[in-house]
Every structure is written in C-alpha cells, then in structure tokens.
Amino acid sequence: MITTSAPGKVILFGEHAVVYGEPALVCAIDKRVYIHASKVPSGLKIISGKSKDFRYVKKAVELVFEHAGKKCGLDIKIDSELPPASGLGSSAAVSVATILAVSELLGAKLSKAEIAKLGHKAELEVQGAASPTDTAISTFGGVLFIQPKKKYQRINAALPLVVGYTGVERSTKILVQNVRSLKEKFPEIVNPIIRDIGKITRKAKRRLENNEDVGELMDINHGLLCALGVSTEKLNELVYAARKAGAKGAKLTGAGGGGCMIACVPKNAEKVARAIEACGCTALRAPISKEGARVEKHAI
Image (tube, rainbow, N blue to C red):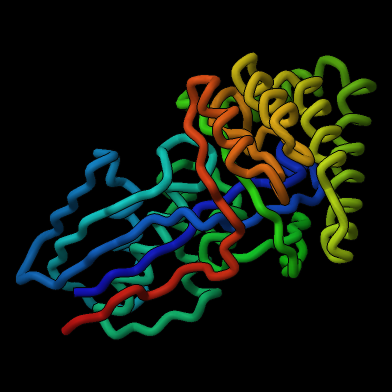
C-alpha cells in the first residue's frame, strides 16, 4: 500500500484577470488531499467520505496506465482536508496525489513536471477546460508567479493565512462567463479594471520578494473583484469581519460567487478565525505549504 498527498491552493492575487493575459500569484496551503492506494488482483474500487464524484481519480488512473504502458487492479481511498467546489483546488489535489500514488505502485517514476502535466490533462479531460495553475501549484507547492504562456516563477515568501469558507458551492465556468459578458458590454470600464488587477499582482510579487506587507493590496484587489461582480454578500461579510478583527488585508480567493476568502494574519490569527466563525462560516488555519505532492508512506 502507498499513501500520497497533495496540497490545496489559494489565489493570492490575479483571479479573473489571468484569463486575459495578466499574471497571478498562487500559493499551496497546508491543507491536503490524501490518497491511500493498494494493488489488488483486478478492478478499481474507490472510497471517499466526502464526495462520490470519482471522475478525477478514474481519469488520473487511466492516464498513468497509458503513460506507464501497464495496468493493475486498485483499491483507492480518498481522505480530504479540503471542502469540494470551494475554490481551494480539491480536484487538482486529488488528480495529482492519485497520479503520484499509482505511478509509484507501478514503479513508473515520474518527475514533478510529468505529474503536473498529467494532472492538468486529467482536469482538462474531465472539465472540458482547465488552467494548468491548480495542478502546478499542487505538484510543486510554495508560491508561484504565473504569467500566461511563460514559465512559472517560484517566489520565496512566508504569508500566514486564514481561509474563510462560506459553504456555498459555485461554478468557476459560469463566473468566468459572467465577467466576459460584462467586459463585452462595458469594455471601456472593465478593461482598465483587468489591467489594474495585473498591476496589483506585479506589485504584490515585488513586495513579497522584499518581505513587505501586501495587506493593502489585498484590500484593493478585493474592491476591484467586487466591481467585476464576482463577490457576494457573505464573502464581503467575511472580508470585513476579518479586517475588523485585525487582519492586515482580506479578499475573496478564486472565482468568487461563494467558495472562500483569505485573510493575511501575521498577528491575530485566532481572533480573525473566531470572527469568521461568528459569521456562521468555517475558518481554516492555512499557512503556505512549501512542499507539493509527496509520498507519505510506502509499505510493500
């Protein structure tokens, strides 16, 4: 049997603007998906306590079999610290951890780059469209500065975060379409907002590299995302509650429409978490995970 894991993620800066060629800053968080896999004589059995959507596991297994040129029967159990459809990259983490587990069982040693590539292919084939961002950060960990059509750049940054989960599932596809429609209707207004989010992301990168505060930039970025119509009353409530409780900055993370927000908490982490919980939502203490996909245990 083998146990592998891969981290979830949050987008620090740049969501939605990255669709239009602007950069994004994304980081792995210390909340993981664990895959426990064993060889069996035949078949594929999958067990999960949180989700019955096994499309990502099945596709990941299929792609590893194809890549390795061999197959085996598998029993797979999924344990996740990430809520599904929350914007925290749970499907990417499942795909990446499954690919690592199955490749190890088959003796097909894959590089991190190969794991990320297969993970992206799994998401792409299941969803029909997918950015390589989530599977890259889940594979490599840490903080990545991502520019479309360019190589990822690793940023050495420590950023203490609390994540607030609204409990509201949302569709990234629909939210991206909504922003696109708004952009087409009011290009002279929306295009500058998109460009400004890109400017904020670049400035945040420089500040993180110099170990400087990015809280105010998070606040500005959230305001621009509100202008794009992707925030919600509950997300705003959590953002303002976190700031009032002492967060240096707070914003929604991901597509919006529900899902999660993040708060930068060099101090007052517990107070900020309690403020989020007082709003009837879940608070996750989620420091950056410098380590990406990994083997937790390997027993013959």
